[in-house]
Length: 120
Image (cartoon, rainbow, N blue to C red; front, side):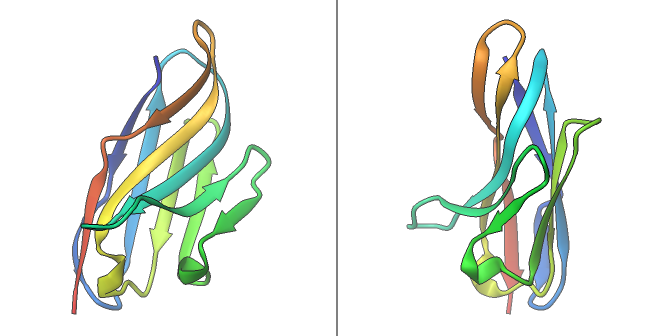
């Protein structure tokens, strides 16, 4: 079983920055896509950013130019640098990792979520 632990959320003012981190652990054979999603109160969970195994990235339109996703394959970690934060970025941010483990084959794991609150 693959576990994800997120960190880095918090309360900031509009215009400030935060960096989220997510560490994957377990009997991981390889990791394919790593992504960040978010869910605001009363809204559906939405994709924020995704990075694949070769480093290609994809962002939701509202995050382009402000957010940067990156990964450290040696550490099985994914990061989300969030700049110029806006109150509408307030949400619980979830890490998602897909890959293959040694025992169970393919996996699609979610973190527990980390709260990001942006005040105006």
